[in-house]
Length: 89
Image (tube, rainbow, N blue to C red; front, side, top):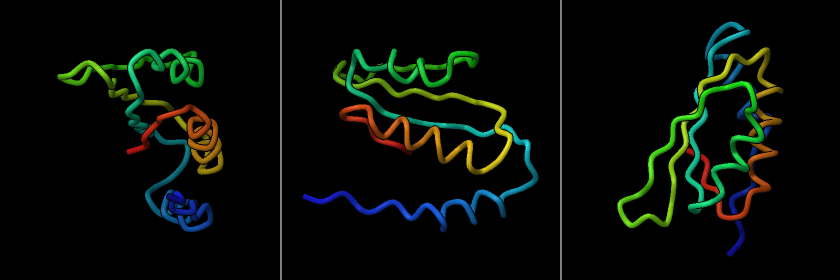
């Protein structure tokens, strides 16, 4: 099954319309248990909140980070997309 193609330009327009930069942005990801360190590596200076799923197979992660511009947010999503099994919310 092919993943839906990411429309970077549309996403960038929405981010830029959401307010002025720099702004506090909330990232939310779900990763297989044990992969949360890979998310933490993308956000080394930020606090990450994690919560394990009821079955223990997945971990939800929430990161609030001050972003300079929309491109910085998109770059982090692209880097996170390399993590096997990751779901971006």
